[in-house]
Length: 504
Image 1 (tube, rainbow, N blue to C red):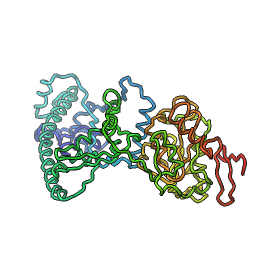
Image 2 (cartoon, rainbow, N blue to C red; image 1 turned 180 degrees about the horizontal axis):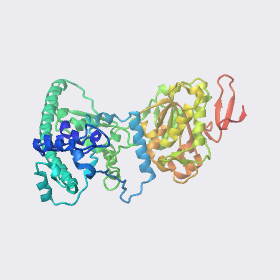
Image 3 (cartoon, rainbow, N blue to C red; image 1 turned 90 degrees about the vertical axis):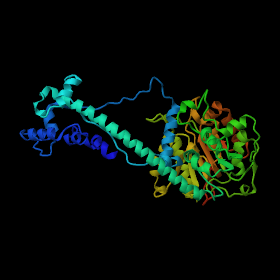
């Protein structure tokens, strides 16, 4: 197949199709080819190239370059901010290798097709062109008709190539099917004695035939609330006696390849886990958490209700440089901005986050123990720019990620940059699933940066979270960030980067 398509490859697009190609597929006889070669020898060319194909000489000025220009069409639909952000976040995940389904992309040789020349058509009928193609000496064909004759030759060549290609495809398909069956037979002998088989949801659908042969009785789906229903339905083999779904429908949902199917009336972003739960199926909720210090766990009560703390989280050490303050919401009124991709960023907030990051590192917190989270790719780029330009952090890898790509992860200290400020619409900062993920990643220290007033007015869940931080003692909400120097024991309240207000 690769050999058959070689004349149409991109690297051959700088010249018309050669006469040898037409001879090879039986459209030109050897006699016609020899006559083309003999006639071309009598021509003197200005470029003085000896390897010019005789068909190119025969065509002369009747060979015309052409390019197909594809224009972007949105079919009258306006792109909104959420769509743009979603695309940016998925691209970001792909760049970081977070999406395990990247392993399922098609492998093999890629051929780029482009035909760069056609004949200058003189609108001759097909019967006239066919008559000229039967001529033993192409040099006797009038110059004005050569473009049309070449186009007829191209059309016939493509029809022949397509016919051969379809036959090869049929053989290839049967061969790959036989190969797949052989691999399944081999893998079956390996898997039939296995007690546990682990696959992704995509892998389950891809190898469903193989997995069904071992007749599994129990299927356990982890992160079931993030997997859309179709791949889970594929796991319902005849042999299955028990399907166990483990997940949290209050964190991120799954995504459909076609985003318009996520909403009404299809709701394909609703997992089987969430659907069964809302339909009243009996379920068990785990209430004891082993990640967050109690002060941080309290922020999740508006979402989960009362959670129990395991004893391992009761006496965790504090954060060097923050005194007894494990969590804090630094509120500001710095305006947000849009970048060229319609993503949001807040330059002053990014500077403030980087300033706290450096302070924590200088006071003894390891760089790898700190994660910076943000809801927006535009803010992530600003944060990385400021971090790379900081002399104290040269040579260190700093973990700066979006909330969507951090589900299931955790770290000792999390700095959350909310970006949005001063506008009633806070975008997908109002999506409860994303808020839940953002608030539940930190183990020992959690520091939020954003406009508390704007968020509290825009969304009731943020109002509850901010109310908890503002009413607890000691108060964990304010326009001044309290930091403590480990070496000298002094507490300093900071309103902006390098703006020290007073000391205690």
